[in-house]
Length: 454
Image (cartoon, rainbow, N blue to C red; front, side, top):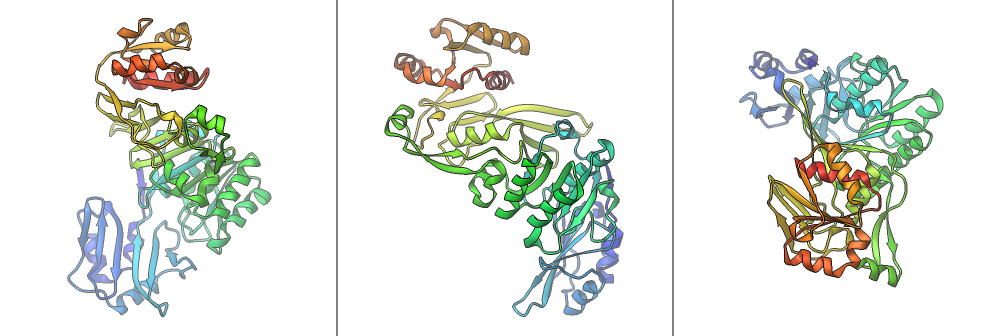
């Protein structure tokens, strides 16, 4: 990776006692942000932790010295430095006077999206999730450069606070040939998003920090016009978006559905359940867990449905090592906030609850545990030949059996498993987990077998 950060331009805006200290600091290249508040000591936050920069406290004159060297603060209390990616945010008192500054170091990291380049080439819309400071903006800046320069697509960036392309009318070279539309008022960003589609014929639109219902609706409208979207929003995982009402349109919307008495009895669930309302604006979701470790939802539609039903699902984990080798693994989704603990994995421990999670209800359930290294699978209501073909094609250490007493795992169609009370009883007596899938869902079978063999 090649890092271009223009750090010296940021240091030049600081008072001399801070500039001199940071210029010679041994961890200068690891700095994340500089925090200054009136009447308190200045502090720098590095990747290794926070550190005070001086025993001298910050005065009003120090803040005034810095503010004079910045662009004007916008209505979202952010400013920048000409032709750089640095962001300076202010804290105001009740009289709207600035009492504190947060100077965030902006970096253009070239080569930072090697983990998901194949997803970009798919042409599908991508939603990037992560907590503040994890590097979402850096990721989409590099995505803009790759899509515009290397894939030669028409890319338009809707730059909420000039954080992607820098605080200047001339965009930072870190975005490549992509064009940038600035947002004069943050509460009108949704209008700029629609304007970008209608006026500039983009193939890809990139949006940072989708945070309101209007912006989510605009993203949905853009997706329906056939334009590829790449956007970011705050949240640790996909479940956070489902729980955030203004943003649910990004993943198809969530609605309560009232079932008939007969259907509720058949499902053994309450009459009111949650279901996805429509097709999601983003087909792929990326959870940025750490800088070099991301969780991929290759099909947002399926992932959301499985989360709402409380069903067993497997997510893809991608990690890049120091030698730039990419490792792809499959693991169960984290425990979701809507339903009881239905899957827990720790090394070889594997748990599934006895009444199966797909019944879409909350209750305290006991779990089975399987601790064998080699899985012997009994197939019920699924073609034995189909499963054997999957095992042979994947070349994984899984054995299929037609003798239920020899199995340590049962797989079958949900509806058929539910109706067979005898099978449930035998499985419970022998402590055998049961996994139900949708009819003809070869994708679920493949992902399950890959997880069991890992």
